[in-house]
Each structure stands twice: as C-alpha cells, then as structure tokens.
Length: 36
Image (cartoon, rainbow, N blue to C red):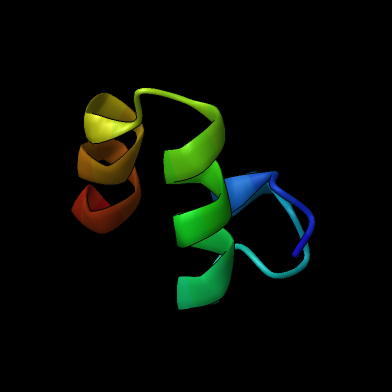
C-alpha cells in the first residue's frame, strides 16, 4: 500500500483505497477515483 490512490503505482488496488479511507475522509476521493 502506498496510500497515493489513483496517482500511485497501486492506484487501482482495493487495499490501497482502504488505506486512503483510513487516512482521509475520502468519500470525495473515492468518488473521483471511481469516476474515471
């Protein structure tokens, strides 16, 4: 997990999204990620 979301090398890894959710209030981030 790199925690970088769609910008990181593992941006499409669900475990990475989980890490982001724990670090950030990532509803907006998740919406942007899935919107691509």
